[in-house]
Length: 177
Image 1 (tube, rainbow, N blue to C red):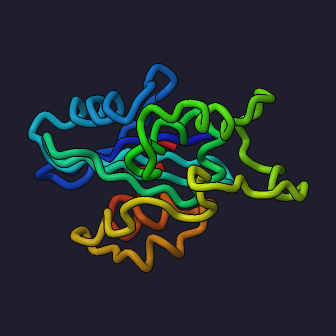
Image 2 (cartoon, rainbow, N blue to C red):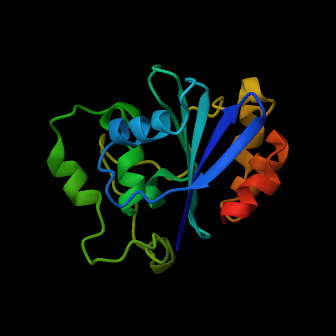
């Protein structure tokens, strides 16, 4: 089960809205969706949580390139939403390497990202393997008072709630849950 929300910083504090990402196919489209939610080019955080498996954050500040953090890249790669966040640039590989992407996606139709590790499957090997664990910009929230070390230690089950609490908008986020 997924939870997705946009947190937009305004002059009056943070505003939250739940959002569907079913029609979003790329990080660029996700960034445009975030920008559309903040007419004043303020900071927008796209929050994605897959229950018990991983969470991801995308930060959009005006027209700047989006900044991305994913708590567990290997689990996120087996998710349709995770695939949006895990760009070739973030993974450090050439954009034309689509065969590797096809190999990493769970082809059995499940997107829960849970179970494969528990069944003793080996991690994908080689230079194009998606790492287990965090990937991206852990300093994504540093200027908002949440240091990289804190972001790296957040558990997927309550990460978004803890982030919202630290930002002072827990009630706003919970209202859209």
